[in-house]
Length: 90
Image (cartoon, rainbow, N blue to C red; front, top):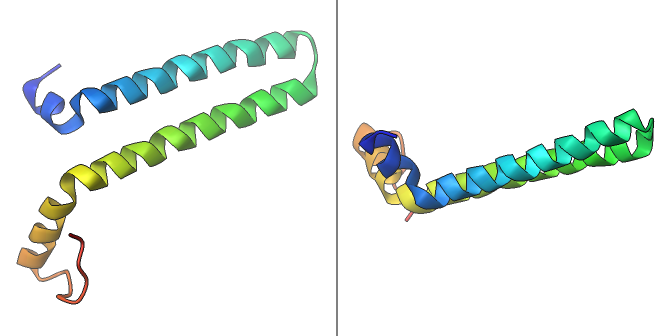
């Protein structure tokens, strides 16, 4: 992985995405197992769990990004004149 990607993402982000991918793969395995057994309720519940895991990973990535780059984004928006002075990100 390149140096630029490493500095943008960080090790915490890579761990989070990796854990989400492993958990999703595990849930997909069980979803197909339940589909072979023709258990529609469990297939739907497993698909719902996959969606919940995905949303959780995305929300935590957004939170991490905002915590890391909040001041930087606010300073750029102020320089461009796009951020009102009454709105404070920091």
